Length: 189
Image (cartoon, rainbow, N blue to C red; front, side, top):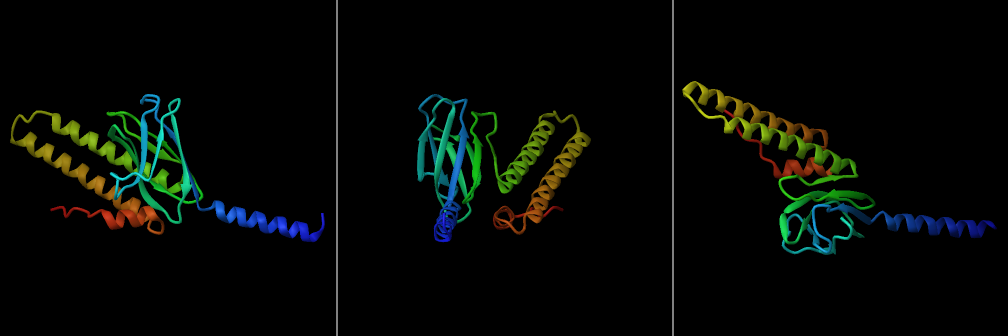
């Protein structure tokens, strides 16, 4: 091989590599759903108009495409839209989505941003379950009502701090910017 051939091969490789950085892949699992069920992919701001649709095949689904930027998206089961996963679609990455039927939660992973997003969702779900458990306890008197209110208020504060810490840790990436743009911390008394 001469220098000219090597140079052309290198240029072709660079061009191919730069083109591939726009491609995304989504590897999905939908074990709770029937063969042939429809899985939709949409932006989270326009979920009623999916830009891609595939069918469950042997408990799995797969999307590929191109994107120029990171966007918050939604993957959901068409006939059960409550069974969904929000995630950050990122160019040049593979994201894994596990869609589950309710009451199980769906999960995302595969990129640093989506891993942090899932960690935040897990924390919020844990706080929510604790609050629900406290609220199921019967109120016997004023003192128990005050204690319950204080416990729920404390969990609510912890949840808010968790969200703000995640935003701070991710301030230089799309997750932090998304939280800053969409989360308004409550004003506690």
